[in-house]
Amino acid sequence: MYNFLYKNNEMDNTVDDEKIMLEDIKPDKNLKILTGDRPTGRLHIGHYFGSLKSRVELQDKFETFIEVADVQALTDNFNNPDKVKQNVSQIVMDYLSVGLDPNKVTILLQSRIPEIAELTVFYSNLVTIARLQRNPTVKTEIAQKKELFGESVTYGFLGYPVSQAADITAFDASFVPVGEDQLPLIEQCREIVRKFNSIYGETLREPVAVMSNKPRIKGLDGNEKMGKSLGNALYLSDDIETIKTKVMGAVTDPARIKKDDPGNPDICMVYYYHKLFSDENTCKNVCEECKKGQRGCVACKKQLIENINNTLGPIREKRHYYEERPKEVMDILMSGTEHAREIAKKTMEKVKKSMKLDY
Image 1 (tube, rainbow, N blue to C red):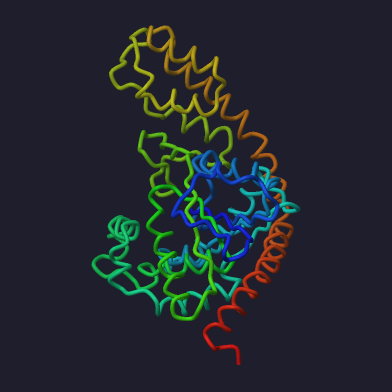
Image 2 (image 1 turned 90 degrees about the horizontal axis):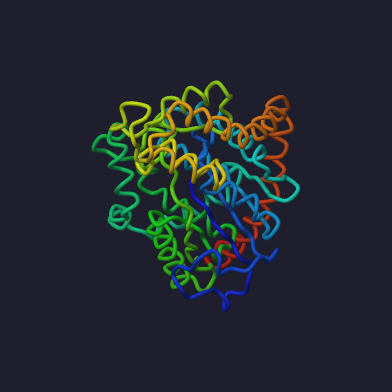
């Protein structure tokens, strides 16, 4: 998952800092935001608390674009295109179910904007293989995908930061909100922009990373990352029975054997999730009663299940509406893509003029 904040301003007004905080940018409908997700599975509560809630808040403050990054998803799912295609509509339904309004946001499909692919080709001449191999984010992800690539990583995966630079610059980005682990990708984009401008003249805007202070949500198993492939996620579309099963199996304090044994809520995933889904008073009581051995784990989990369902129930109900109307979902996506492409076309006109390709 990656988030981009785009700003429309004159070239000489761009921020010189390499990174700033999101709260430093005042709401302005002249600012464009582009966020995105790879369609490799349904979205879970990590996405919800990490970015989706913020997107719903920002849709009234900025012009918002949301990219379904199906091309990028194929870099490590090239052998399973059905998985990517099937999840495109799943992702869009998740967007709509959490409250993203198609009258306020533009939802677009990456593969239907050929200007992004064209920019990727142009930029590939401006970055070396050695530089891509040194990118810390890419190195980490390649190591995680040893089972897929073995010792021979594909050109597409190694070069996905070039494609991401095309995503950013196609929409004339000034700001790119990211987590700490994605900063190397933005610096890679900045380098490509500087190289392009140094050769062809001032054409592209150099983006600035906007740091997000949203914490990464842990998995039900206590893993620092909640992931589709890790089997430790609560999905926005999970029904109540699935939620019950998953929460009842959540990791608690392993040292607590009996119900009245004092517990340590700080290492209990049930308490961790109470802090996400329960009010402040409930969390305080859970913490105090657990430490005193006055609250059993089963009762604590049942209360958590109820609170989770209070949050996800309305989302699930709205999603059911769109599940019964697949044509409406695709119409929203295609309409948004058409609008987004008009912006990318204008960028491409500037790029080709600078590159002397405006025959």
